[in-house]
Length: 406
Image 1 (cartoon, rainbow, N blue to C red):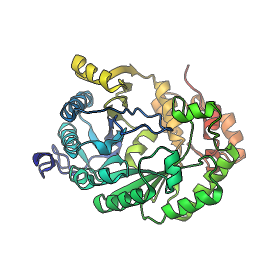
Image 2: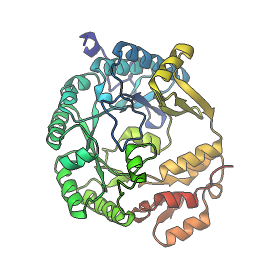
Image 3: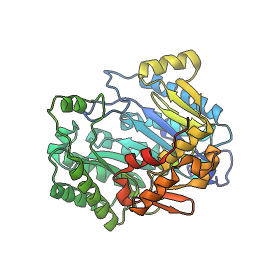
């Protein structure tokens, strides 16, 4: 790693390189950077991740910076409120590549005063050794994929680390970064309520201010889906999964980390600002293979396969496979579908302005009133939210109330 890549000559993360003034949050842009490579493919994973025998790190750094520059040209005049390195396994990126991307992003856009820069990491000892260098590169928040605190569950999930290794990595992360979150997967086949309660209660003792707690879902195209189709894997019964969900809400709420999104829990003020940009339907750019973006009223989709993405960069100077304008109605529907995942819900007045429609044209108000009467929705003036009991039925509720554009 070159000394210059991790030098102190990076932009001040608290101020814009172009303008020392504060940046209004409402005008901030989010940036997602996708690193598509993993050491191995987990059997539950349907993310755009790939295993390659070798990676030309210099070529990939250059390509990501070129894709980044294209997005900067398309969003001139904006500032960045957050950067998120996702994957794949972005903790496998050289710290020099992370630093180069952070530097370039600051030079292209400028940073909001309190910019959040997150990197997803696997809790292996090899990757944990890089945490100090990654922090020096500008990352101030890490999201650790612990997934379980039980070795048998980790083997079932295809994870390469042990529970002991995961906790050692968590300790290293907490010494390296200002903010740390970690993921756990629950509702595994055969997992009892007592087992999950014990695991979650243990997780709540580690002192992080953010947790992502996901129920195991069998996604099409994964190895788990193939096993389930052959009857070799039996997913958790929905009623039992619902009991585990309710237990999760109770334990995290009592510990001061209530759910602010259906699967994400945080102490007040510690929510993921980057993910809130998605759920609040703010503008974001995506670079790297398979990355999505929403900016300028359009949706962007990069080529998913790494080799195809690289070929597109050589051919056209960016990795976009499709860029398509969204109608006002489509934007309004997306904003509804994303925002109702949040405990705060959505302002139907704002959604109406996005969609250029009246609230009654966006949601079935008769259905809203019926679901409100049985405690699944709450409508206060124009603030619509799904209640905690309703979150158990979120997909069904969205299908009933949201009027999708023709």
